[in-house]
Image (tube, rainbow, N blue to C red; front, side):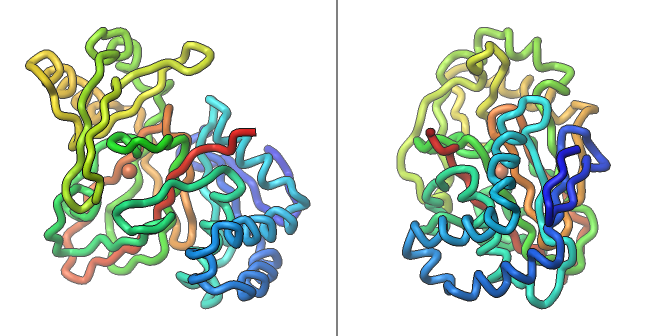
Length: 303
Ligand SMILES: [Fe+2]
């Protein structure tokens, strides 16, 4: 396993494809003071400030972290890491975690504008009660495996989910599936319907007022399968497309090779959005259940 001063790096206990990165306490404490140079308004209003906080993080790891994170995300064998402070303290609070998430993502690429939140990141709660129009906040329903950015024009190469806080939570683990571990990949990938254009739209809360067209499957530069899919947003044009999507959904949810992992509070999971699918198991019912997440999606830097 790679060694970088200031970081604890290990294989995730649920999957050899996921790398766990803990930022040692000394670096976290240096970051806490450096991050105090900027408040959240500066981070939100001035895109260059986001690069300044990213550089703080990279400098504290001898500028090795940025290269390492990019290598992991682009490597088909891995493509996913979980990063967070070694120890969660009063200082690694929500504001710190927004800044840390900003720093990590700005070592990878540029975030997309998140229409749901009206800025480059979105914070949202999952609670006992929910009146929203998508599965994102429905605590007691399985959130099926999917990729992000299926209904937007922006390129979505990667996504980050940070767990800011949670209380009274049982269940709700992350479910992840790598295309190369998926038993039905070949069969579905070779179905010509999967290469047809589908129409993708989204419910009101997403604040996206257009539709996009793209296939479910496409290939990367080496001819390997890539996927852009979510269950709620494609509008099948005919029976063939409808049946293909049902088969795809059943084959994803029926996979025995899903990685079920519990994201620690304060940590973020970052994954390549072309060959990793992600979802969430249902929570156990509890009136006081509360989880707060932060998400950032974006494209890689084009060098
Ligand atoms: Fe998602």
